[in-house]
Amino acid sequence: MNKTLKLKILAFCILFNILHAGLYANAATEPNYVTNDQLQSSLEKVKMDMATKEELQAMVQQQGHTLTKEEITQQLIDTQKSRIAMLEGNINALLSLLAVIVAVLTLFGGIFVWVSRRAFSSKLEEVEKRLDEMKQLKNEAITKMETVRELSSNLNVAIREAQDLQISLNKSKTAFDEETERIDQLGKYVNFLELKASRSEIIRTFENDVNQSIRLISDLEYWLEGTLPNYGYALVKVTEVFGENVTKEGSDETIQEKLSYNTKSLKEIEDSFWKQAARRLEWEDYADKDTDEFIDPLNDSFEEWKSTYKDIKKVHGIIGAQISMNPHQFKPKT
Image (cartoon, rainbow, N blue to C red):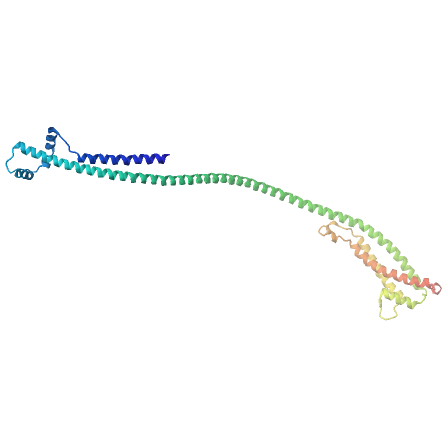
């Protein structure tokens, strides 16, 4: 609607200028009539410019006789009228040309203004669009910055909470480690108490085995003091248990000598056992050890004693079997 109105106004201006130029052209072709007063007034204003001395002489010479003052005046008036008419025509033509030029300039100016305004409007719309986009981006950036600030604030709070939690965890871990160490020490101490309690069982078992070994050794000594049935066979079997050359070199080592040697060893181990049993178990000796290392020193002595006792027991079984199978051939010492 605005563009149509602008075009109508521009066309009206062009048409007005063209009509104005036409009116000036018509005025240039029609004769102009003036009064004597107007003429005299005009003559007074332009007489110095419009009529020179040479022109007046030429007019006088054309008449061929001397003119009166009135004739000269009339001649001058006619000349001036023709000059004025020519001048008005030139001025009207110039005004018409100027009107056409103005009209053309107005047309081109209007077109230029319309094109420029249209281009400016397009650019303005694009600029406004860019401004709107920039405002939107600015608002989004502000929103994101606020979100980032909020997240940063929350993150700082979370970091502080994590640090507090870490401190609390460290304290808890320290307390847990201390408690674990205390429990481990307590567990070790319980194992130590169990070790001390098991010592009495070891001693009781050892005493029973010692009493039994005394009986077996007494039987062997009684049998060996007498005459054994098939002594050679018995010596071979006892040698397989006790070994050869236990007390001396040669093949004449007797069963009694082998038995005496092992009986003596058994007694030495027994004495070492009782000496070790007399020493109390102390917690300080086990506090830095693993529970797998909680071993009573009596165990080593007891195991060594049982190994020797086992050999004596085997020999007791061999000789006892010999006598049982040949009871009439056994002759005890009288």
